[in-house]
Image (cartoon, rainbow, N blue to C red; front, side, top):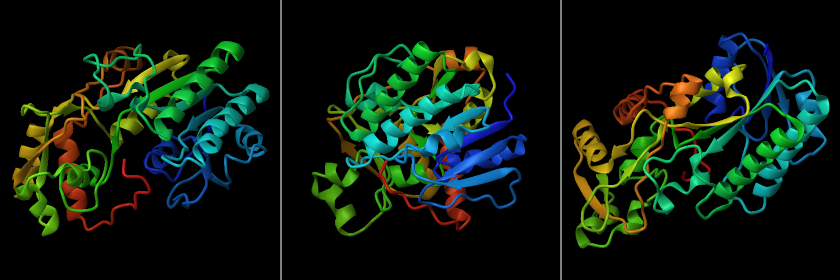
Length: 330
């Protein structure tokens, strides 16, 4: 398999904006799909930017023309009006165009651990690739299941060379600090303010005092989860491109290990000199992600554990850079 020309959808999104420079550095010629946000090509060579909307069914055949591979990252989140047309119909249009053109050597689909329900349901420990689709409520997780079903059927029915990378919750910039501290901006769930029941907890929000949240279950056991840093996500994609062992497979893409909220809270508290506030969250189930297949088959060895993700987030804030506006809380 010789991949040279790559179509990248979602090129200006969280993953796309970090992936594009690495693709250019590796010598690929990239056709980058631009929708609302402009694609940053500064200092990059061999990047063709095409502005368009995946809801336009006539676009897909033009996008895949002369391409060797597709990396499909584009999607919308919790948007009832758009998710079927953009996420599901858009994925179908691309897959169908790839089938019709006959020269696509690999279609890499951005999947998500949302398809497995993660914290919303009691889970086996850990969640591996054979875990059935059991998405938690929401349009985005539903769309990730439907996208995977489309990919799997195009693989079975037409022999399309599919690779699915199931990303855990992706963290970039200062995302982890926006998640674990009380002051806005907030990122992800739980929304700590919604779980503030005591006067002590409420005063932090009423007086706009910052602190570090520690999620615990009823009874006091700290919550456990697994996330992934943006650099590991990019690494997993780069490892998959043109890799014969990735064809026809789905891989979990998460950090090297899970973390517990007490450990995270203590580390951030010490780094930022902030108090810790405990929140009892009843609607939360622990989960971890099995990385055995990704390590042994794909050769993917993630490097960014929770401590390194926090350190990078602190460095981002100290740099004075502005956080990229988030259209969706998670």
